[in-house]
Length: 110
Image 1 (cartoon, helix red, strand yellow):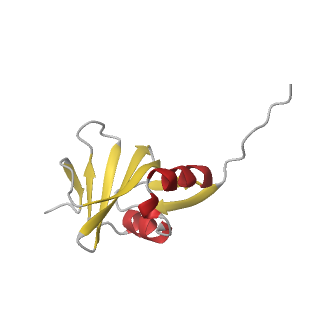
Image 2 (image 1 turned 90 degrees about the horizontal axis):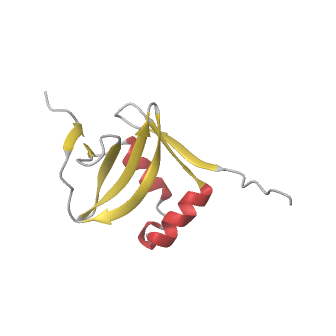
Image 3 (image 1 turned 45 degrees about the horizontal axis):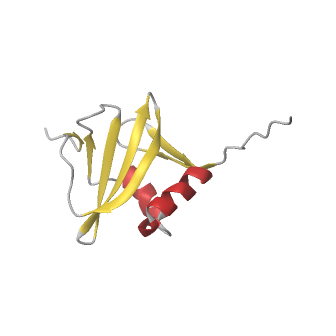
């Protein structure tokens, strides 16, 4: 029997202001579009949210998970990413009218 390996194609890697890069693959991006069709055509907005978020929160349930928020009209675009050392990956992306509670990690108030 022949084993067929799926080739992993990186769609993008974006640095974040909280010290790690976030990546996603072509196949995972396609899955996100099926689950959240409202992000179709918004790849650049997702990258901008990671690169220049308005706020970043650490999840209350998993300290490795960060929620990146950027204003999107009357709503917010939220990119949820899981950090693994200096790299991370997108868990999900969605549009929301509220920001989830958690520890704000960026920007830090002085």
